[in-house]
Image (cartoon, rainbow, N blue to C red; front, top):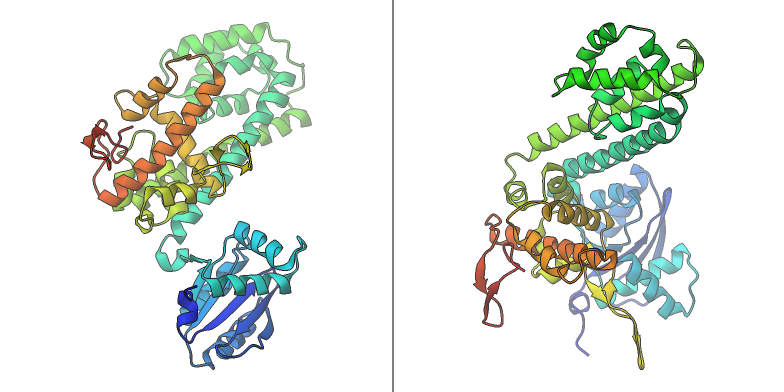
Length: 426
């Protein structure tokens, strides 16, 4: 058996098992069977001590580690800045290799460091890309903060719809159209109870609520409808100065603040990426707007590092896997051993793309469900196929440097002329 790349040169190999406050380090020096152990605390002093020890060997150093939350970021940045080579170990591969080596599924830090070192020796590692070094740290933080704010807003919105409105203004539910709109929350904040609305005359109410609703088509008719609905409301007759109404208004103000934060993040994302070449290419694809493009750039980084679209599909967890043993063969399905946030972004972008006219995503979706448009299982499979196609298109568009073209006739690898997946084909 040919020796791995790491074994062909004199190189110090280091396996590090990371945790919140301390890291277990195992060092293998070339030509020596005994390994050096160290425990490094999560402090600048211990980081310097580890760097000094590794530098004292006077040899190239390769460090392997498993990404653990964000606990690896500070240490790996320090080690990378010191000039050491960094290699990432897959969590799934680490668990499987540990079970095979120790014939046990138990987990502890010293054993994990041994397994990481073994995977370094056989070359079963991945290249680590530090976001701060690669210049994608700001993009990642904007993307993750946007997701956090959006989730908080959605949770609060559901609380309003399922708790507060059924108590105080059940009929108001039919007047809201989108959770992205601020006017509905602003209106409820001003008039959280229908009894507060009917305490005024109809004309007075319309005049007072008109600036809150803003510039909307048919605004007067909408407010008149709300007023007539309030007269027949079954909402609880809670006093306007009660603590219950005060709490309702507090939740509404939080919802409006989250909408403002989300809009500000969206504006900043567009400003930050406006001149990014990959952003321009991504937004040429149907279904990919500023936020989906932001998520792709944040999670995938430089897509050009994936030489083939199959590698990118595997990174996303969109590759197919089948469980097979003897005569038994399970269903072929997505492995989902990849980046969950990126996979979700592809799914959302695919759903948006099939709603737009004249593009190959919609064409593929329509052909997929043509046998029975009403079958949920078939539609789910179609959306999955569209998400995988979205990943292939993203890879091809960025690799080629050319924007998306809806129906591009090209030559497939087999030599036949067909709609290719490179720039929007099947």
